[in-house]
Each structure stands twice: as structure tokens, then as C-alpha cells.
Length: 428
Ligand code: C6P
Image (tube, rainbow, N blue to C red; front, side):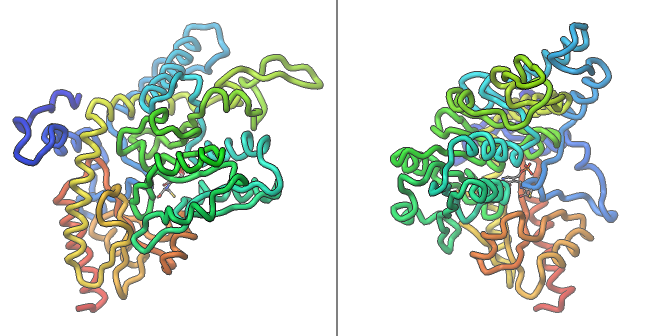
């Protein structure tokens, strides 16, 4: 669909890359029905895509079509509908594999999302490989999903959690690796892009450092896969996890990618139908990859929706989406920096589109409530990153986050609403 808009602006102007020139945000917005609704009698300005993205018609219709035409359970029935559902489900897996640069579809395990994928690795890999005295290295900016499962594992086996600190600009202090990364570290689990600060972490450097001490790496790609080209094999990580709902797909599905040899060596973590080879009353054998990790009836319509989301994003082009978001984030930083009392947290350059800030004299929750009355949806709180907020010395922050359908005029509206909130609070 988007291919039709390619070149609509007649080629690149000076200083503009080809992918920036091709991007037609107004045409993109037409694909998202929800963007046409009003909130509190105002046009909806949705700036909370880091929490969950909106869904294009192509995804909504693909799921609707699945239920109208193909619904059945997968891998079980010999009847026509079950064959169709199985084909669609496995085609979705192949789509994901191509999208993230997996060597083969069998390396892609469907999960409920990023959180479940990390819990899977913590239970299956961690349970089998971690011993008392071992360490797991994370960073101070991790989402709770990439922290709490490791804490639970560490508690169980007697391992230790270490964290790479951040500097005042919200970037990792890589100098601390000398002190933190030794042979006791068995896994380095880190986010590619911070959901609060927008920081882009140096994946290649971190992977090389982990490898040098024989540690594996898990990349939390929840905030990167939706926004930029990501190639798991090229990045050199061992595990990669993400959620469909942040990339135009439905809730309830995401994926774990892992290297075949690692996944094969891992025991299953949940038992039930689908994941077995042979079952007797006393014991069972396991299915091969990836079924070994997919016990029970999976999220079939959601897999179909995820495949449609990938088609949609691919049709626009991930480099074009990334370029659009970069431009918009730069613009937002410029506009918000002009506002009195406003402080942006995190790096100002070379960053993703999650933009956390504080307004002097107004609690983030009050700010988000006032903005909501203007139709502007942002998030306020700790964004499931309490250790990070502690490091920043903040109980909470406000966060605007951008995606392919956001515009400069929406950033202007955010800026106006923030100024108004100062007036409401009687701030000069
Ligand atoms: N962050 C946010 O508003 P789930 O909930 O499993 O789909 O994703 C968890 C998760 C893991 N890692 C990162 C970096 C994330 O940003 C998230 C989800 C949302 O920031 C909801 S708390």
C-alpha cells in the first residue's frame, strides 16, 4: 500500500536522504483508523507508542479475516481449516525470522511478548546453566522485564546481579566493564534502546566485551525492532526478544530468537500439549524446535496480525521509519528545550523516540492529566524502570514517545499543551 506513495514528494531535496524524501506521514496516518477519533472533544494526539503502538487497518483486517475464514487450532487437525491455520501460523514465524535476520524460522519461538521471552530464557537457559557464585550483568536503565526475571533466577540458584551504571547524560559508563565483567558473568542482558531515555546502546562493543569473558548476551529489542532495521545475526547477540504490540501488531504475542545450538541445549520451561514427542504416564520426550518452547494452543490470530504488521512496516521500509522518527525527535527536542522549567532526561543526540522529561513545579501525573484534557496522550510514572529513576533522582517522569504516524504539528500541540499546564499551575 505504501509503495504507492514512494516518491510522492518528487525525490530528495538538498540534505535529505532518499528514505526521508519517500516518507509521506499523512498517507501513513490514513492507515490508522484510531488517529481519526477525538478525545475530550479534541483531535487525538497519540504520543505513547513506546507503551503500545496503534494498529493499521491492514493488521485489523488480517485478524478479522483469519477469524472469519480460517479459524482452527494449529498442528492438530487433519482438516482443511486446521491446515490453513497452521500454514498461516508458520508463515508468520518465517516472516519474523526474515524481519530480524534469523538463520531459520525454527530459531523463532512465539511468546506472549518481551516479558515472557525473557522469563523463558531465565527459566530454561538460566535454570540449566547458572550456579551459585555466577553473575548476570544488566544495566541501570533496564525495564523491569529485563531485571526481575534475573533477580528471581539469581535468588533461586544463588547467583549475583551486577549493573552497568549510566552517566548523567543517560549513556552507559563502559569504563565500568573492567570492574564488572569477569569470568563469573555468564550472561549480559541489556536493552538496545532505552524505553525512558531513548539511549541507543553500543551493541557491538557490549557483545565483544561479553564474548571476551565467555558470557552470552540477551538483547531486549522491545524498543528497537519496531523503529529501526535490526539484524540479530549481524548484531552477534545470542538471544533477542521483542513484542508485536509495539510494532503495529496485536497484544499477546512476541518472540524469542535464539541461536539453534543454544535453544536445542535448553530444556523446555512449560509442559503441556504441542511441546512433546512421546508421553507416557511416567515421563515424556520433547518436540524439536521451536515447538519444545510453545506448550498449549498458541496465539494464532495474533501471529497472523504480527505477520501483517511486518508486511506493513516492510512496505514502508524500516530505514524510512527510522529517518522520520529521528527528524521528529530532533524537532521535539528543539521545541521542548525552549519551554521554561522543562528538563529533558537522556541524550540529546543519536537516540530513539522515547523522550522523558520533567516540568519544574508540576508532578508528571498532573502533567499527563492536563495534557489528556487537550487530547494529548503521554505516559507518566516510572515507566517500569524504577532503578533508572532512582539513579536520576526522580520519583517519576513524563514521557512522550513517537512513531511513524506522528507529525511536527503534533509536537507543536504537545509544546502548547505543556505551556498551558504551566499557566494552570500559575507558573511564569
Ligand atoms: N515497555 C513502556 O511503556 P511487554 O510488556 O512484555 O510487551 O514489554 C516489556 C518491555 C521490555 N523491555 C522494554 C525496553 C520495554 O520498553 C518494555 C515495555 C512499555 O515503556 C510498557 S511498561
